[in-house]
Image (tube, rainbow, N blue to C red):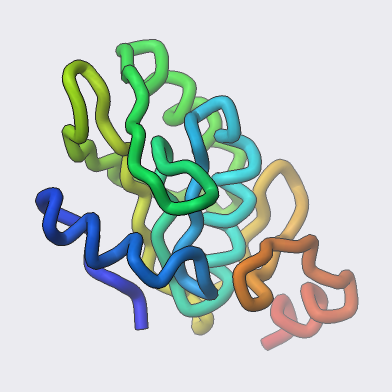
Length: 142
């Protein structure tokens, strides 16, 4: 089941407590945007999930400063999905001038497989990996 996007500090603490898993990924900052969007691709090809930017790998929410350029960078990177995706980016303030960026997607197993930068990805436990060509072709045919 896909967790709900956290709306406040209490929701965030509850979401972070179990750590990363099949439907939850932590990225320290948008410096890891490419890897985070590979995971979004895997979530789109599976049962959905949430990527949180501004959370350390140990689950500590430190947040990051977000400028208009940060949001533009995310929007440009989202153009690298096929088929196209429209993904809202939510913000959760965690410290003075710092926020956690939340990208949440529903799984879309019934639609065409998604690629990011021309490659399909899948989620296996708490890791994201390139999908095999054989599996990708089977999904295309379905």
